[in-house]
Amino acid sequence: MARKLTNLGSIATVDLSELGAGKEGWLDNPNILCALDTNSLAIASRYFLLVLDWPHASAPASFRVKIRPNLSPIEAECISALEWLVFDEIRVIAIGTSCGYLLIYSLGGDLIHRQLVYPGRILRLRVRGTKREITEDTSSSEEVCVVIPDIIARFDGSDIQRVLRRWYQETQNRFWNQSSTDRGSEESESSFALIPYQLWNVSKYGSCVDAAVTGVMPPPLLELQVAAFIVEQSNDQYYCAVTIGVDAAISAFRLYEDRSRSFVGAILSKVVPATFSTIASFSKLVWRSQQPTKKPNQSLNHLLEVKFILKLHNALPLTCLKDYPRKGEKLTLSPSGTLAAITNSLGRIMLLDTRALVVVRLWKGYQDASCLFVERLVNKDSQEHVKNDYCLCLAIHAPRKGIVEIWQMRTGPRILTIPCPKGSKILQPTYRFGSTFSASSSTCYEPLQVFFLNGDSGQLSRLK
Image 1: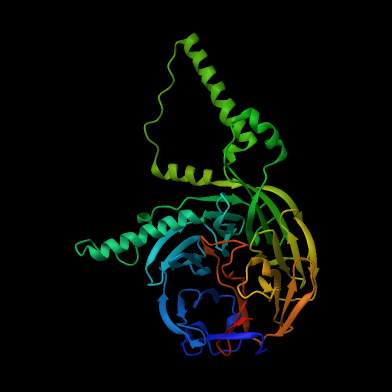
Image 2: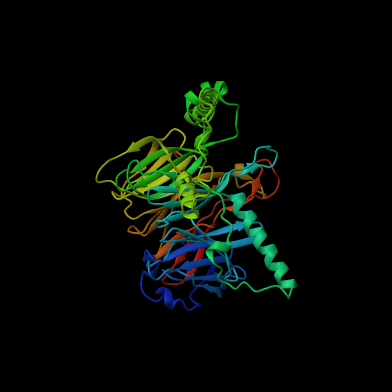
């Protein structure tokens, strides 16, 4: 095992007794959440989180900051999701709460943003991006997906980055302007500008326990053929979402970026106003009557309620796999979003092609397993490796077997098996926004890697 793992540091030097450290298997507590970034680790309990840093490889971890969000004691609000957001030189921590709030904190512990996504427990914050070639003209798709039972929300990465850069600029200006008023570390929710996002209802086949927006998909065939006769071409996109849950092991949906741009919406947006205008003009001509005056102003609460209702759209169901008592548990996406590894309650792992929506591979006998997509080096001749020198693999952590297996995708063999001590958790650094690559570039390519955090020994290692 020593030949396969590289030690990066240890968290044993930091007092983590508040998180339950010191007890055997404390990382297996479902209330303990971990998120890894380069030389940094965030560990959260129900009501606070700690950020640890490594100055360099094989160095002990040092305490950086402790963040205790302002949670509602009346609703028993707690931290339910955790993830890093990395934009070039900007690194922040995103927190999802059990009441549906998205909180973004700086590494100094300052609250940057607070926003209600949807009333409900946030199950997962998923950061994903499709890396693009440097020579391509099309922009990459980068997003933050918020998973709530029955609901999927999607934030565009550029919108979040814009808010973060504005906050850092304002913070720097306040630092140099000593006469400016101190707003404090905890600001009221009304002082934050809302980040635009899209919201879809995916409860057609029951509540979900995990979900992901896998990428852009083509519109329905009918819309492709008829849209040109109804409305002019638009840049609106359609997304594919995969959900797993108790009622349905796998479900897939088509998500409309703007429902008003769909075929039905186009008819309603073009035909109905024209018809109404014609009828109104005819009634004026015949009856010489004026239209009734509108009410002066509606209440603010009513306007907010209407705006909130219009923001939630129904997703179009595509397919569903129901196989009681099989229940979906965890979902992992490949970097391109074309493959998804899904674990279920029967100890099986399904490899789903998210474009064809077909299960292409199945593993059995992996109870309580966790999966991560990694890249393994296959061409060892060159000194500076590019993307083509690596192959996509799936790392399966089987805690009951005490091993981690590496399988080559899609139908390749098992290429590696290493022992994994009890109480370990496999982690992977979050996606870095704005990154690009070139398969033919001479620059060294950074592949996806797997990290191991052993809660009993406190050791953090990386698979070679």
